[in-house]
Amino acid sequence: MRELDFYLLDMKYIRALAKSDDNVMSVSPQTGKQTRPFLGVIILLNGKNYCIPLTSPKQKFQKSSGVDFIKIFDTESSLNNGSNKLIGVLNINNMIPVASSVIQKYNIVPTANDTPQKRAEKRLRAKQLNWCREHSDTIYNRANKVYRIVTETPEKSRSLVRRCCDFKKLELVLDKYILK
Image (cartoon, rainbow, N blue to C red; front, side, top):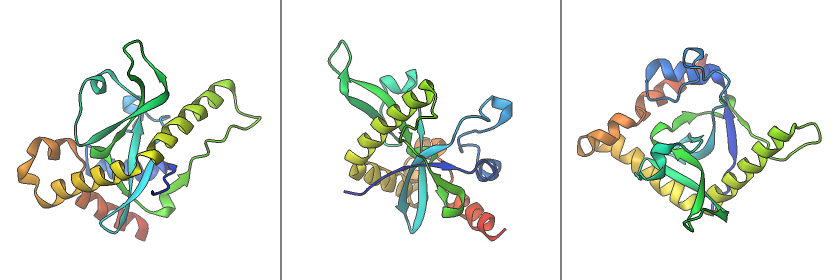
């Protein structure tokens, strides 16, 4: 099993990527997302590190499914219908290439200085990360599948390609960003 962790990404780098591809998750002040952390798991794809962003569960994810996102469930609690509570989503379609210079490991260990809200957030992140670690093979397999479809056979799934970042284009942006 592969050991995954959560990482925060540099906002200037995210903005540089977003200028090249509208499918990069927004951190723009115009959309009110400037304080949203860009948090995700890092995996290796095609010789490059990729960050798969984590997002909070939204209504649109409740009943839908797809190859381009993975639902994260709280296996310790169940809803009235017996299913586990949805506590997050990994947006494979929005994964982006990263380098060590633009990532920072996210600390999920509560500290004495944390507010009650921050401690609750870290408990949630710990549950999400445990689920990701338990399902790391699924995460790697799905990410590889999406990457291959988008980069090798885009004509076979145009709707998926429209929802995904342009991985090859973003890899070039990363290369230029690192050279600066």
